[in-house]
Every structure is written in structure tokens, then in C-alpha cells.
Length: 197
Length: 197
Image (cartoon, rainbow over all chains, first blue to last red; front, top):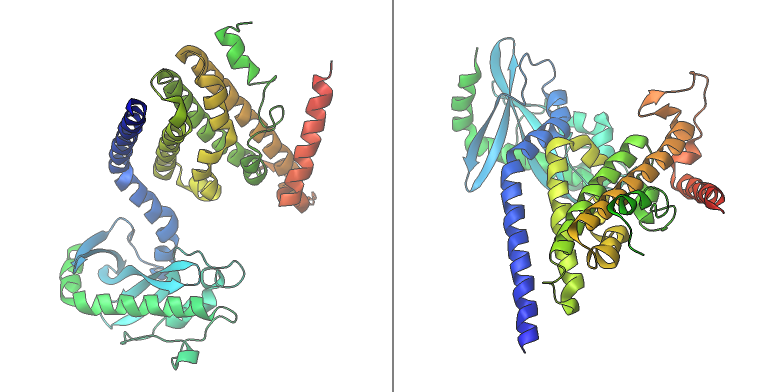
């Protein structure tokens, strides 16, 4: 009996220390990791969508609360006027969540473009959503609307052949972004003015 | 026959160099040695885990009950692996992306658990440190040399710098999975010949 208690006690102490240590390190590196992800994962997509912006959208960003969720907005300055935002949302793909970054022109309410950020789709099939710019370019210049659908579901987006689920995920991500933007529109247009230079 | 601390350190570099002599830890050896850089990154991450887990296991060797020792070792090793994972995400994000799943898999790398069970649980802290450091650096050297062979032949570069002229046609086979087996086999043969008395 004493032996069992000793085993339980030692394992418990060990795991407690381990948990505490990891929590401390996670807390210390959280911000750094977020910056790294912005730079290496979301950065390329943001830069591609807000191409030609005179600022660095990764630096010029703000956060807004959407219900209980915090959303990051990346600001693009064109011709000296901050009139574009990019934000990310997710759609359910074949291998988990597909992250979609979408740029919106605040002035005319049209999409500036979309790009896939994180995904675990099949290489050569769904992964094309990220590699092939032809697919995401279909979102460019489209006005913000209630929902985006692939042609199979009665929409206007041509799915990648062999990757309907991934294409649906991207469309769902863009739909979600449009929803967030419509909900937060007043706050976004308020915040974005701070970036006018 | 008691060995000195220096001997405990140097044995990991030649006599017991994993993967060539101990033939342990082959999974990361085969998977990440596409380039020298990956090999060194993986090796150093493993060295850190080995060093940390050896020190802690050795320090706690009289406290840990033998019936739950493996569970305790795994907790210690997993903690260090998670620390490495977080630090790599924070400071060397591109390397973290290429090594991907193989960083968390250090937990089940039999070198780490093997050294904890076979060495650190029976020896003092100083010797265990020397052992962990030696084996870790040996592992790093082995991965780097295997990575060098594969990178030079398979991509014509070393650490990303081209070594042959533009007329060199990369031997693609070497950077793919079968090339890993072939080059590891050849390295093992050379090591055995060199170590023959």
C-alpha cells in the first residue's frame, strides 16, 4: 500500500512540475510564435492579396472582438489611403481546417483576393488550392455576398478537379470572412482610419 | 571497469555513435537527412532533450520507484521535447516547419529513452551529462554527415550552397526515401570496415 501511494505521489509531483514549466514557457513564447506564424505562414498570403500596398500589412494590424472570438485584421494602404483589410477564417477540408486569408476593399466592398494559409490537404489534389493561384483568383473582384459556393452546389466558383471538398472548404472560409466583415463593418471602418497617413 | 567522464563523452562520438554503431533512432535518421541543415537541426534538438533528460533522470534516480520508472522517464522526456518544440517555433520557425512531426517524435526516439534507462538511471549526474552530450553530438554528426552525402549527390549543394557547376544533374534518388536507406546502408558498411580490428 505504501509503495502504491509513493508511486502515485512521485508521478503526480513530476507531472505537476512538468505542467507548470510548460505553461510558463508557453506563456513566454506565445507572442513570439504568433509573430513567426504571421511572418512565415500568413505573411506570404497577406502579401499576395494586398500586393502593391505601400505599408507592411503584417505590422499594421489590429484586433477586434467578434462575439467571444478575437479576430486579427491586416491593413493595406493604397495610394496613401488605408482602404483594405485582410482577415482569416477557416473551412472544413478533407484533412482538417483549411485557413483562408481574404482581402476586402473597404471602399467598394469587393474582395481583393483570397489565399490559403494553413491546410493538411492531400498533396497533388486539395493542396493545389494553395499552390495554384488560378483557383483562388476566382474570388478577386467579387462583391461581398451572403455566401460563396462551388458550381456543384449552385454557386459560381469552379472547384479544383478531384478536390471538391477542399474547394468547398475554401468557399466556406471566404463566406465566413464575409460574415465576420459584415458583422464588424462599423468597427472596422472606425479602426482603419487610424492607419491613414 | 569504470570510465572517466571524458571517456563517457567521447564514446558517443565513435565507439557508440548512434545510428551507426548502436543502430538506434533510425526513423528520424532516415526521414530528416535530406540536407545538412535539417540533420544538424534535428541533431541539436535531440542533444538538448538527451542532455536534459539524462541530468534529470540521473538526479532523480534514487527517488523514482522502479515500477513506474518508464512512465517517469517519459514525462521528463516529453517535457523537454515540448520545450524544444516551443523554442523552435519561437526562434527557428522555418526549420520547425521542415522538421515538422519529427520534433514531437523525439519523445519516442529510442536513443533518448535508451540512455535514460541504460545509463542515466545507474550513473551520477556528471557522467550522465557527459554521456548525453556525447551521444547527442554523435547523433548530430551522424545526421549531418548522412545529410551531407545526400544533399551533395541529390541536390548538388551543401548547406544550400552549390558545389558543382551548373552542368551538374542532381541525383534526385538520393533525396528521396530509398536514397536514405541506400546511403545509410553504405555508411554503416564503411563504419564497420573502419572499426574492424
